[in-house]
Length: 50
Image (cartoon, rainbow, N blue to C red; front, side):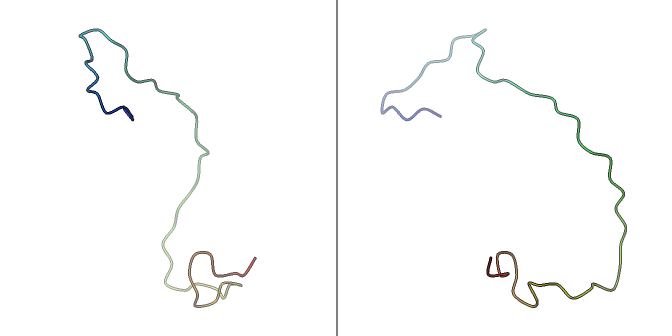
């Protein structure tokens, strides 16, 4: 992010990014037609009051 008011010239060969490879957990997803009742109720994300 360039927060300066002046343009930033990126020359060929300049390194401008990095990546961190992290192994994610193996999960198994399944589809359901029924959801159990939760503390959130009909609210939505952030509606538990905690």
